[in-house]
Every structure is written in C-alpha cells, then in structure tokens.
Image (cartoon, rainbow, N blue to C red; front, side):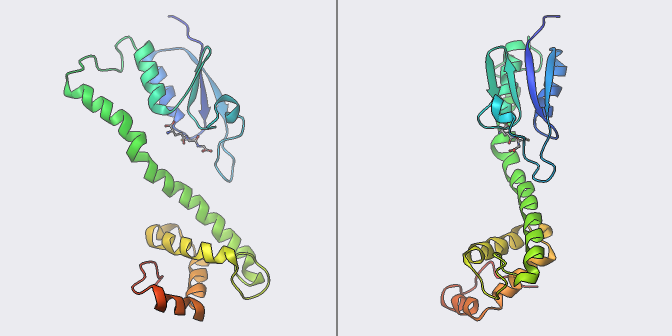
Length: 205
Ligand SMILES: N[C@@H](CCC(=O)N[C@@H](CS)C(=O)NCC(=O)O)C(=O)O
C-alpha cells in the first residue's frame, strides 16, 4: 500500500473522530497526534494553536499542507486519495447532490445550535458555582458583601432569564433563586412597568 505522511491532530471526544473513521474506510495509513481537553472547561489545549490558528480539531497535516474544517478535510481526503471510494462519481445523480448537501449541512446548520447548548450547559454550571460562592457575600455577582447589584448583575440577570426560558433543564437552583431576587427588587419592578409590559423573559415558578 502507498504510504502517506498524514497526521491527524485528534482532540479527544471531538469531530476529529470522523476523520479517523474516514481514513480507516479509505485504508490510508496515518498517524494520530492526541490532544486532551481541559478537564473542567473542556476546551482544546493551547498546543493545538501551534498547528492551526483556530486551535480547533480536526486539523490534518499532509506533508507541508495543513488543513482544518471537517468538510474541507473530508472532501480533500476523498477527492485526493479516495480512488472512487467514499465519493459519488455521477455528478448528475441525486446521490451526488445529497452527498454534497449533507457534507455541508452537518457543520453549516445541524451542529451549531447543539454546540451552543453544550457550551450553555458548561456556562451555567460555572454560574451555579459562582452564585454558591457569593451567597454568603450578598449573593450578587461581584460578591461585595453588600445587598446591592453592580454592573455584572445588570448584564447577567437578563442573560440568565433568557437561559431559563430556552434551556431551563440546565439551570440550577442558585440561578433561579438569583433571578427571583432580581425580580423582587422594587427598581426592577418599576422598570418592568415602564418598559417591559408582557416581558417574555420574566421568570415564573
Ligand atoms: N467547523 C469546525 C468546528 C471545529 C470545532 O469546533 N472543533 C471542536 C471539537 S469538536 C474543538 O476543537 N473544540 C475545542 C475548543 O474550541 O476549545 C469543523 O468542522 O472542523
């Protein structure tokens, strides 16, 4: 078998698993460079930035070529090394069009919203932990020890209200308590009377 200098920069639990599958189907030799996610933030390690400025996985190198983006990598490997495998030859067929569509649909439309949810889940667990930490210090985001909101609260409160409406399953008890505390403030109520009639993000138990 022809040998290829392909290296897959493979982040654990990530999209790059697709590339390994494709390479196996194509029976192309390759080597894997492994990257571990940060145990808490789940982000890629900074070493990935040494391979590609986006610091995202997958990235492949093939000799002097470095290529990111799943769709581009898949098309590159299928077109350059597939020898007819894993591609559709007849450009006039519906299969060719479907193949093209779903190759781009996956990253272009399908995965984006889901990724936001996953990131949202991580964000909210951080918020819960923070609100637990500041609870004995007044319970507001800055944790000044006083019972008064600061800039962070004016921005965070609505953010959390929106989360509660759209991703309530990820919001914890501290977040909900915090929102109730905000909504109980006379100034908040006055503001709602003045500009928020039927406000869509008002939290109700
Ligand atoms: N559209 C890009 C998305 C790349 C991407 O977001 N990869 C994720 C892994 S599934 C990543 O590297 N996340 C780690 C991070 O952003 O820190 C592609 O299809 O390659």
